Image (cartoon, rainbow, N blue to C red; front, side):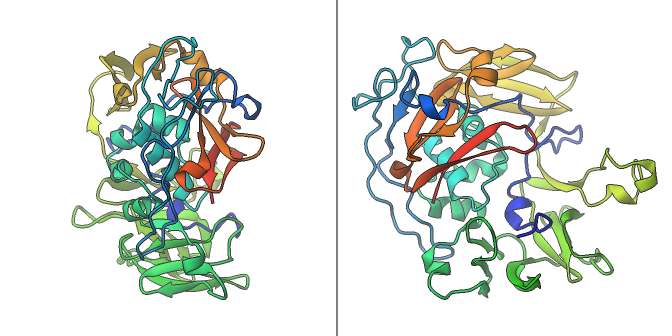
Length: 403
């Protein structure tokens, strides 16, 4: 798959929270939130937890009903990280103070990262859990109660295509309005529910490979005369009557997905474009469309504050509230940023000390829970292994449980 090709997962459902905007359609603007626990330290000072919610993730099955997962183990945690004690004792960064994590938020964030076919999260599991971002961003709240990948798929309308869709001799195709992609990508096989994403399923060829994607009606906008280029994304406004659409052009046809009822599409100028390329507002500036969640507004200069366990952020005229208390953490302000911190942890634990990673045998994922190294067994959530990579933009490592 060429880098220029984009699927709906790289469109509305995944690019809905990137940078704050004064237009009140701001995306999530967090400080540098890294993961935690290096691969060689998973049995060190951190906490180790099993799946305490009683069901493993299981495989989703596209538009079909996903099979239930097997029973997980009660949350196990030992003092010092290796656990065996089913009393679920979790200690803060000081190694002394106990706190109670939120196992369902952990599960939903592990599923959000693992069930998504694109291994390139907008936010790390560390950020998802620590700030309970799914509760803060209305377009992601539907995943909060997810127990399996099938639940995630019903929420986001995308998923990994397993053997039920891509096994044997099955090929890329439209199965009704389900766009099923088999063997045409370097990553996981995948599917998109085009009916839920605002389009209809269609296929096309690129360099000898067939792809299935969601075709959109963007009239009176048009792809006529535009080259095949999945790296250029455009907006079609629903003008308040329907969802905004974010699309790319291929063979004169628009492909992509809706921004959902919780977000709007904005084609932001490309500040890197020179005057010769079109400059500020010139032709070279188009094709940078993103979907932004709608947020409440705030007045005055940008700032952060704590009110009880709630971290309140005013950024670019947009208001964000992160409920630290809902995940057992305390709100703090440092370095002009908001933090949700585990007992005994400080901003440096979040910004510097913690790194996401996998155990040496690839069975365990470790992430940062309020500055605290926290690891889980991927099998407890229905996944086969932990995978890690480095974010190209930030240079920081990230990890997730995967199939």
